[in-house]
Length: 243
Picture 1 (cartoon, one colour):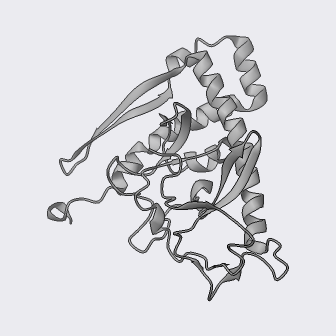
Picture 2 (cartoon, rainbow, N blue to C red):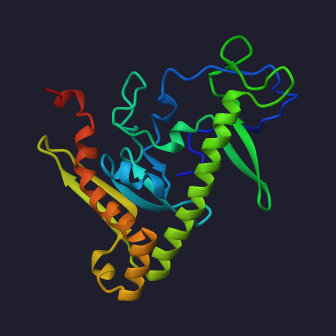
Picture 3 (cartoon, one colour):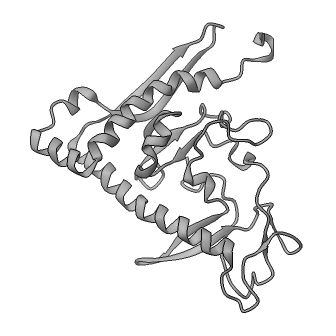
């Protein structure tokens, strides 16, 4: 898994180079169609937990990232249908922010970037990214507002995950299931909270986690694991097994 997933050609947004660029909103979320796990931030845990399993994955740089599981490895995002529509009530912010993204270009410095390969970019129709005076127009202003909040939440999310690691309550998990049609599935490489180790955490730490809301996040994660069966239920049966 990469932290940019479906971003293909990320470039810094430039008021001169992209002065004539317009943005036409995507009619389809099929760009996320092969993202079988999506990074999430702690502000999304409650919404995501109602529809998807939440687990933790180690990414290339060694960081541990909470993710919404949306499909089986090597498969499709089971929450995006054939028409590119999201089929659950909540769309994770990682998807909603596309095609915009912040890039770290220095210490405490973020630069607004876009995926230049996004099909909604053109110079003929849509909302201009910059006004006649070269100032950011509505699409950029909206993106900056969303990305700024996402970045703030991301910092808090890193702190939360660091607390879990320091407490030593994460364990590798393997989820297996056999469906009625005879198919078997296994999910590997996931980290989840070990409930036995959670019960051994000191009272002072639990009180601190309760005060910060982190204990609620842990239980949202644990409850979300019940959605693994929902994830498997969404897996389409091979044509020979279809009703």
